[in-house]
Length: 496
Image (cartoon, rainbow, N blue to C red; front, side, top):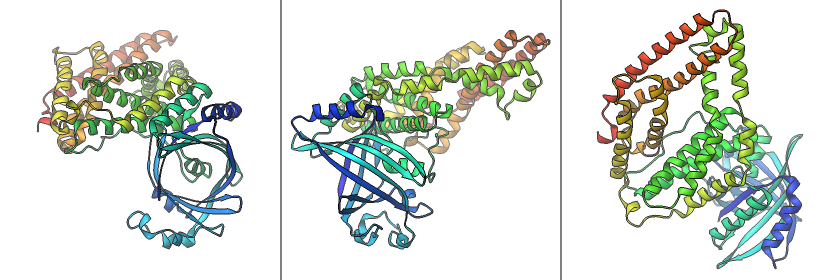
């Protein structure tokens, strides 16, 4: 068994010559080695291997055949790490009995699936390879150019792999930075196998509906817990970055935004523990500035959603409804986000946060504290800011709610990072009215946009529409006041 650890970078096919030239510059005086590799990937019709996180292939190199099983691993910041098992084979069809029985996940019926195996897709590419000395080993630098084929479908391969073979991972990251800044390389989240399954229409890549609580353990120290949360936020971001590249959509951008916010939240905690991560925080804040159009889009969507509270009434006023739907369409800036995702600073941030998750630098005292009591105190201190803002007035007006929303959202995100440590029922009961308030505050934004649209339209009943909007806003404020008072009475789950 080998434990594969490699940085994967994707490039545009048009950059192939520049990539080869840079590879040779970085590898001097090492000689280039080239080989043609043909790979066939197998699974059962119901994708039992894929569902278990297993990739099975047969690779041909000249007259040699090799059978490989890769088990599920992790991808963080472009670094792919997973166990790999290889055996020589003499035929073109897999023989699972050649592998030791103990490599398979527990209770996985590997040998029972032998008769069901069939080819799902293939990859054919030329690999240009260099072996760059690094400490006591090497970094194998490979540039693959070719195609993935599934039936009559195909997509190109143009990717770099920097596999650490006894060398220093930090050297691999240094090389990766050069490719990002010189040939516009991008961190690669999806393996060739993952892209093959997508091409064969055997799997799909969909945005997640929401973030989840990071699974934390009370016995861990603060450093372990925070880096676990940072890893989760980075993987959430990268998943949606891959979704954006495969099928650009607003939900993909929303997922990228949530992932960036989670990463920023964790970095702020690390900064409070005397780690120098301020440059990363500044970069993430700049990125979020490019994603600000989402709040306007969400507000307009609230007005036009067929199952929403306003759709039926607004659809009776054709000019107004058409104006709002036009604004909703124009609010979407997918091309802007796609351009952002290709920028050096965006890709370097993904790479460097991944490196941070791997290295996990720690303050020798502060980050070795027990996680749960530290989390309770951190949640307590953070929530005091929310309580101060939301209990300041007898009655909050729309401008107050909108102004305080970022602080509330930030504290709820801290709860996603640390809340798993505490009783689920108490946690959910505490968060419920505050989450209701977040939804209500977003609705305030929707009604604000509605008022602007009414004033700009030439509907004949403008005054009546404005009065209707006022009634809707007052009704919403009444509901928000109820949620606010209920929320302020909740006992914090971290003190239970």
